[in-house]
Picture 1 (tube, protein in one colour):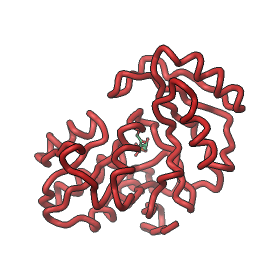
Picture 2 (picture 1 turned 60 degrees about the vertical axis):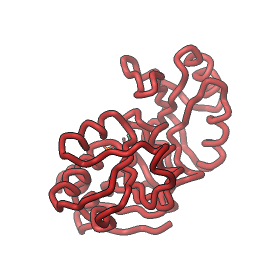
Picture 3 (picture 1 turned 30 degrees about the horizontal axis):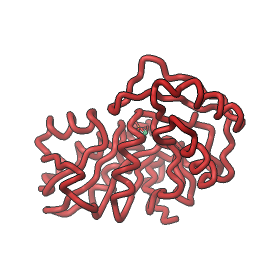
Picture 4 (picture 1 turned 135 degrees about the vertical axis):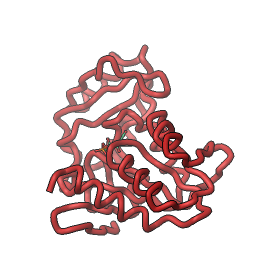
Length: 219
Ligand code: 5RP
């Protein structure tokens, strides 16, 4: 089965969590795009969707799904998003699509975070996927030096500017044995806006699409 088909299976399974009249947080990426398509196909009438990126907002507009601002929506019952890597404990690497900061805000404001992935993304130890870090542009080199001191190898994602006007460093060569500790440590470096480790607030459920269908993991 193709990877996109596995993503689609997970995305379609997540649509079953929705009910008419809900306000739902929606992440970013190709798996989430499958989720938005399934949501429109099944004609679920949300009160609104809180988007985590300009790309997702554009997709919601295309399909006529009403968007709400997080400041007026308050706490959300549910957040649906993908990830670049996930452990069975619900710790995630996110930010491959550069939307990590807004994703982290919407995840934090949500009571339940359901993460939709294909089975190749499920790992025992995070770090095979380079860890994205959003940084204030003037602090990029300083942050990079601090990350080298932590044992990582940061690579500037050139030509990418986040929705917040910032830069992204992708940190290679990490074997993340203490996701909560590393999340805290990197977030404390001056100039870091957000690290794409979602461990303090990880996923509450994983829906994993694979050859055998969709597996539900509750950490
Ligand atoms: C965007 C993200 C995405 O969830 C992550 O990159 C997964 O993307 P895809 O569903 O396209 O594989 O964190 O910032």
